[in-house]
Length: 283
Image (cartoon, rainbow, N blue to C red; front, side, top):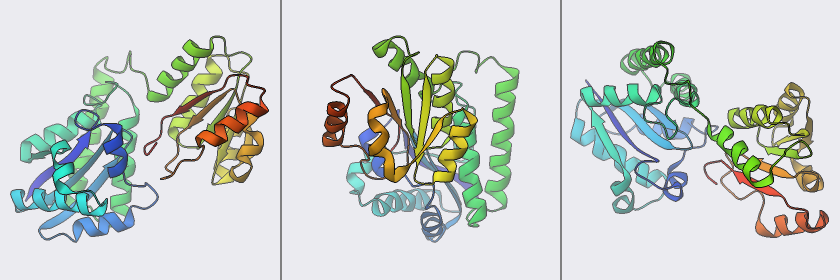
């Protein structure tokens, strides 16, 4: 049995390509079932983050397995294979193991040393375990990858100067707006990136945080954690004018705030500047 990897990342594909190939974290059952339903694919895990989409699988037929997974990615996302294939990389056997160890340890990340990727792979593995697309080989392999990543973080200084995308977004806001002490932030989404952003904004002196999410309970939980205000998603545009900074990190496949929405909000603010940051994939 062989381990194979098929994927793309920030190193091989622009965000325009990556967002077309992204999988929704709340809808993993169908693609995982289709993946392990492919001829010759025994086990499978799908990792989908802002910066990469990778499939880890086991097969007896390396060349055939890789070809079928490439076709699966193209067909599932309705992209011509000839357009997608130029952005894909593949690994098998020892090279596949080495690659996944590097990814889990954040050595292959856009920001080397960032801590999010390990949690994202663990979440992806959790979906595969829940929907029974992962078996004994990938189970052992990924647990070993988690162990290696932990050793890398504890036995080296890789994380000493690492920053997250959320931190970089806050730093950009500071460069553009300057002092944040009189600035209110609206977070659209209640996932890990929004949680990190809330922490960094408040540590940078932001006046307050509002949180909105399609699941209001999640917005309430995050807002409570940081002493902020939860806003119902359907009331977003009622409160948006109160925000000086809007950071969006959702899994929505469509645009949440369009150009006309932004223009209307700025008019309500009497053209007082606003800063919009979208760190989601899809954008």
